[in-house]
Length: 177
Image (cartoon, rainbow, N blue to C red; front, side, top):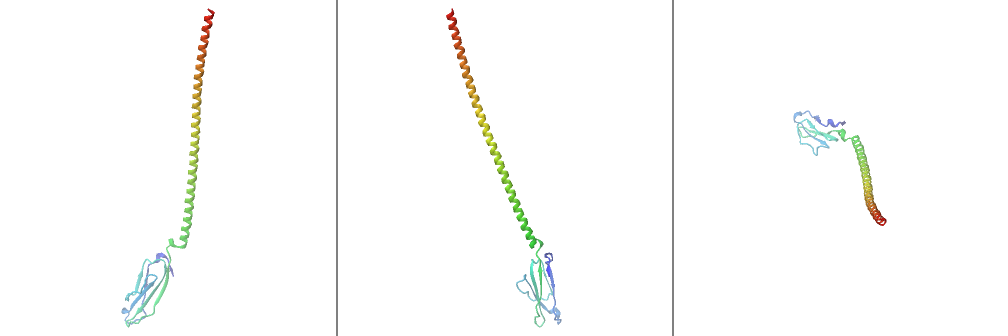
């Protein structure tokens, strides 16, 4: 039979067919897949196993009567199924979940990279605009400086003309008088 993992604690009870002085009959047992060797001879008629791992087991038991004659070996084979989280279906679910998780992480990373690239592009564009604005400001400052210089030259020229006109006026008045 197949036993669920939650039923992995078993108790085997056995007896011999020899009824002659039955309390002195001895038994030897072995759980194949768990025990490496046969147990020592004992008068106990039961054996418990707890917390068996998943797998196939065969319980063997033999008796020895008061004349040291061994009986034939009786065997019982059973399988302990793995817990639900170690079944093939669980491993498939783990694999699919892992793949989906890797896909989600990969997609998230790509989205973050795109956002970072867009942010860098926006920052670069802002820097370019700032640089252009600075160039325009510098050009405006240069033009204002040139305009101021031209205004000073114009004022100087006007003053020079006014002086020349005054001088001509003085010469003209002195000639007339």
